[in-house]
Image (cartoon, rainbow, N blue to C red; front, top):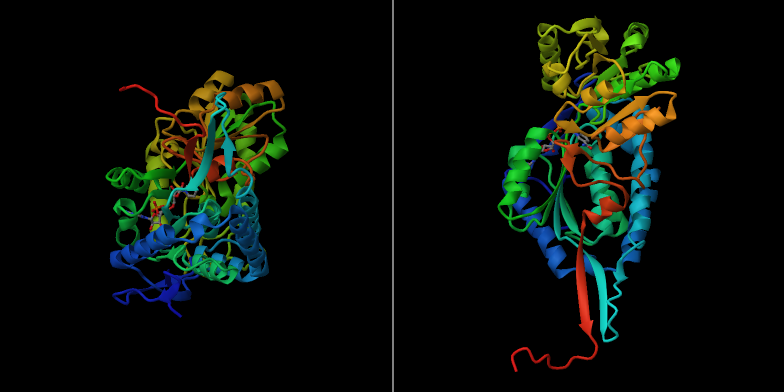
Length: 488
Ligand code: NAD
């Protein structure tokens, strides 16, 4: 069955190109999917435009749109095992992590299903009896939704659910590396009864299948999650037609540990912060900042436990961490570590591919700790997006804040201390979209997600996440019109 979904029809690419998808854990063939080119994407944009301009989706009552999203949530739960398996085969991530993701995805659809009707407009008091004034929220139009490979369906859900809740139509372009769960989602939207043309899917490489989404005049909004360079390119492309743009980009996230912290918990969470999904997490706590007096003991324990993390494929129940997504990505991480060592970082564990026949065909790289780093090093400034932890020392609150904020990014980070007032003071001064206190990584769909500085702008999730996909329109009605006499 063909894999591009355009105007309610499944079809192949116009030039019949396809792409092999291989599992990063062992190189086995997962599937062959259709690979769109620019012309396919332009057709998808035209379909989304028609479905927006001619309806009925944008004017469907918000309650009915919400109900559809709630049905999709139920279908996601029904298909959880198949979806989690597909996600693990494409990404190489452990099955248990993919299962968590599918639960989160269903919750995201539920949240926006309910939010669709929570606030659809408001009456404005003008203080004038002869005027009715109200603000209504309307969909933005045709949305280009572009997503990465690390949390393929989760990142997709964060865009598709609010876009549909608000009444938009869209063209989705997932990462070319991880297309399978996006295909499955389109089938679920179809099954739930979404009208043709509202949801369109193009698979393929960014420069070919993705590029028209950035500059096509019929696209009203671009919501992008991915790397900083691609984000910059899309923002520039969107400027030509002044599209609404939302960018969720990279991070170089500080995890600040004060000497008065609960030691066991902070060590455990420092590992989760950076090594979950092999560090391929935008909010990964890849910069460990440890207070001087705790540094040696803390880092020794982190290194001991990092060295024991068991690598393995997605269905190996003993594995605690999986492979990187591709050979190219592993090469990037290797080059990053080599550069850090050349700059003077001290390798405490990892740093070389694991040996053994079970690792040969996959793109494995072990948990790696680089100690004695400083913020002038590229390993502290640049995102590796791999299982690499850099360690810096600090002395006191002011230096912790200064170092933590000393990158171009501002996505997320954490502070560990038993001093509640200190935690709050530090949290208030961190220029990050999310700050965890004595925790790392949790999020809820009710609270916004997004970056400060070059981690992007615009918000996903929460009320502001829905607001991204809505235009506010003020309607003023004069109930007792009469000549004004300005030009009498
Ligand atoms: P990427 O920028 O290479 O690709 C992301 C998407 O953009 C893919 O679908 C790709 O095909 C597409 N693309 C590439 N060039 C394009 C172009 N010219 N026009 C249109 N589309 C184009 O990123 P990636 O390697 O897939 O993902 C990793 C990055 O994503 C990391 O930097 C990570 O921090 C970031 N990320 C951020 C968040 C967040 O919430 N802030 C979440 C997940 C990932």
